[in-house]
Amino acid sequence: MKKRFNEDKNKFLLNSKQFETAINLQKELEKYLHVLNHLLKTESIPYTLMLLKTTHECVDMLKKHIRNTDILFKIPNIENHYVIILQNTDTNRAIKLGSRFSSLLQRDFMLNKLIFFNQIKIFGIEKTPIEPYLLAYEMAIEMDENIIEDKENLWKVIKKF
Image 1 (tube, rainbow, N blue to C red):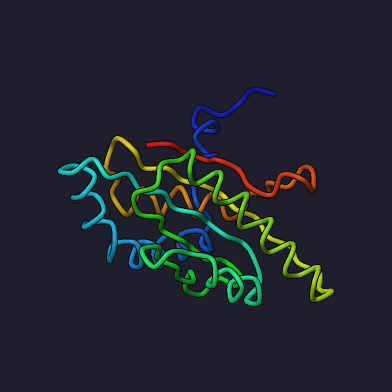
Image 2 (image 1 turned 90 degrees about the vertical axis):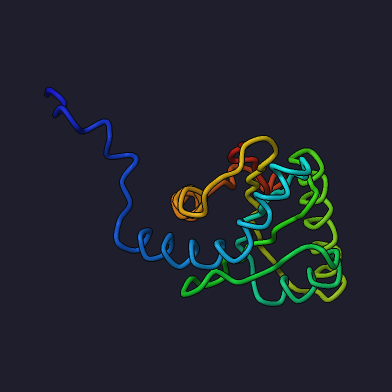
């Protein structure tokens, strides 16, 4: 069967739930990205965003381990999804930090005999400032993607800008 002319472009389209998520996320990101993009342009200070899919209990434990310059917020109207903005952090350091977060959470939950599950997706902004709507679009698409192929690798680098 022959493909329709525009069929290849369907992978870029959002469904209504993804649109709502992107709009809500854009509103949250706008609060921070103007300042972060200014620092990237003028002072060459990179930043990285971590998209977390985890439980409220994991987030409470994670709050003990993040720096006072890291910004953590829940994505509005989406259950168990959070964003951490890591200031002055490139993608490689964010990968190490994501691995450390996973290890710390796993240790804490094993000590308390609880089961946990989390995913971390990393968006690194190192060279080119990004508009909030573009980042919200990329994150909305990634929220529906399942990254867990094996239980040892609970994080993944998605984009570097």
